[in-house]
Image (cartoon, rainbow, N blue to C red; front, side, top):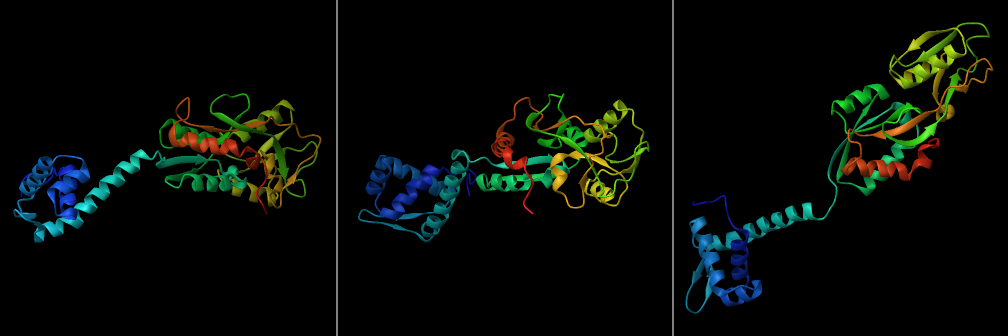
Length: 293
């Protein structure tokens, strides 16, 4: 078989027009070309496939056995070509967003908003990595994720701010310390935004403190607080979590607010990441409220 890897779709279209009309002149009129062009296309196709596709006579044109087989094969091939062009022509965003999210955001309506995004952009896929903002920032810098949704100090400027959230002290129902005692902290490892802000606030207030429990997992931290290991500084929206109480002791200092942000490696978000950030911005009020019970 000659030159089998370079079939011209126009040759197939000409052949299919003849197969449908069984008439070269009618096929030419159908495609808006000359009869000689149709004839050349069919002859070229027969040469490439090394077979007779049409049996011609002065009075009639009929399909050979191989010509009949090529009708369905050719139609399928042209349909694939049409689908290929439609795929890139319709403007539908496609691909995968490697998303990094802090665990606390999963306790908001963030998952609901991902559902809204999925419904609007079903051809976009998401893979999710859960971690602390500091570790997600390293992944972003190393091009291991495309978009980070997490926390920063309000004094910082990287990323696009989604909203500002207050940090609050949370503890068990019975506060595990009294005035003058060293304050037991339940916190994330070194590098955590909430850990650093809590310690800085206690140091400014000249209050004694010690680390009582550490985990990189928010669920473990909240479990430790419920178990009475100590208190923790976390976003205010966690006040709806079962078994947690706001610590209203006058001795505890106020903690600076934090910003929740969306950040990419580029100064300006592009493509699918921009679409997801826009969806988040469109639903800020839902992110700032607690999820349904």
